[in-house]
Image 1 (spheres, rainbow, N blue to C red):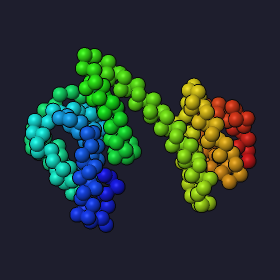
Image 2 (cartoon, rainbow, N blue to C red):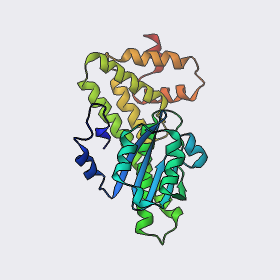
Image 3 (cartoon, helix red, strand yellow):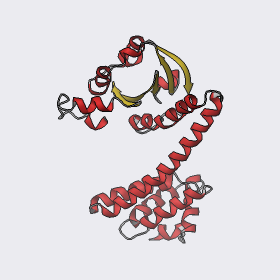
Image 4 (cartoon, rainbow, N blue to C red):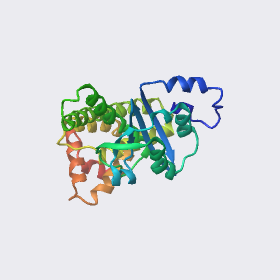
Length: 259
């Protein structure tokens, strides 16, 4: 349904397509309002709000509600939420009153510190849905046990997604035009310096993939720039980790500094 969120589209012409999608048993609705974006999920008579921002800090990042007025949760309401400008007061307060939402549980995920709120709250959909489906499937098991399972599956998916995204970025780099190749290589350098830990085997492999790109003649200048900056504080953990990665790849940091 997000593909229909485009100002050039005439919603009347695609209304039936949207209605068909809204028949799904599990509805995932990305909602934007006041410069923020959250995700709502409807499963049966349960509405789940994923909000890892300021509201989530005070109320809970993933909140499960019983819908007291389920008959009011119509396709028309969904389309209003998706395709019309919303205000924080309506989403945070009036929608709760309109649907008679009653909070029943909270699933806590880390709050968003940086990055894109839309993605942070779409990502939260995965553990939120897994948890709810586990509760429905086996209500005799404690919520804590289901939450543990949902978190484990979420972290396994997230690790897979990170590596998949890295591989896709490397593939796209080779296929991109020359100016974009440099930009993508710079992003890989940021990942190497900020998101790789030599104590974690899969992250050592990730570093080797990135260094295989950055040590090529087209991108070596990017690697040199990072080396010069981080060499200014050789007591830092980032510098220590970087030297470990270089050594594993058969390069000494002083080689990059002397060129």
